[in-house]
Image (tube, rainbow, N blue to C red):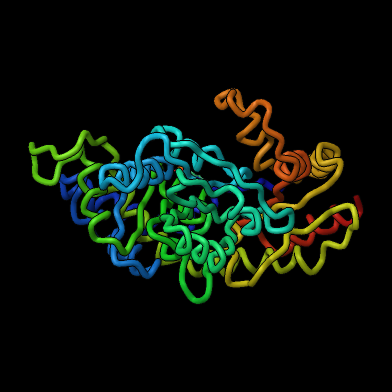
Length: 365
Ligand SMILES: *Cc1c(COP(=O)(O)O)cnc(C)c1O
């Protein structure tokens, strides 16, 4: 049986280092907002090439807090609109609607699955304040075009980099391609903690200062509250774990790229459509997603061969019960994608032999 993602095997590689960090934190007696977090924030900011990084409780909070901070700064207000891809995980959209702003869905390109820059301009209105761009499956979006449009219309660019740790674009790293970025360290992400975890990166000092208070009850100074903030912190233990795993991230990306190269060059079944890669450096392969007309049949077939697959995602956001106001919205490209996509196993612990076995069955299908 080839597992979709073997988290036990992934973390086993670091067991000794993780145990050592665990002992260090337990012995320190300090569990929140301490040196481990400061060290990780510094290391992750350096990795992304940004001036600042803030650890928060999870990726969703990271995005919610960015939008919230722009509200506190008077740059966004309730009722404003933010463009967001219609083909994304629900978190990107929740970050906007939770803050009382309106998510405006923009269809993706069928090949890359990312927001189609040609469709952005027609969605911009007087109320538009930002583009929340998602680097879906680990591939950076068309940031040149997106940043040009943002500049033209004076919009903020917020990146959802939850799936794209270390993905590059024109020599810059995801998290440093807009005004602010949300990152997730959910255990299954390419850089995963051993619990929920998230981060925000930015070069904007004013934004950073607001965010730093917002994640900690709205407080800059203990027992003084500037904002009605929330409690969203990345704990010391997981910050220490993440510092270890961050050091190994370049090797992880390299291994994932090697698996993706096998899939891209060896899968040649006309029934299976491969993802379009805009540039090898753009992609860190959080997911390897193919399209197939009879996706359910393909999934069952692979299951019968002992290959576990998943669907990212089966229901598009505009068809979710949670967003009933979109019930009559027709987004044919997103709907087609959600019907046809299948994610096949890819990870740093998947062996090349396993990848070739997956290729063999896909080509026989
Ligand atoms: C995982 C993910 C999130 C949310 O991250 P959590 O840490 O699970 O809250 C947001 N956006 C995208 C695209 C994701 O894949």
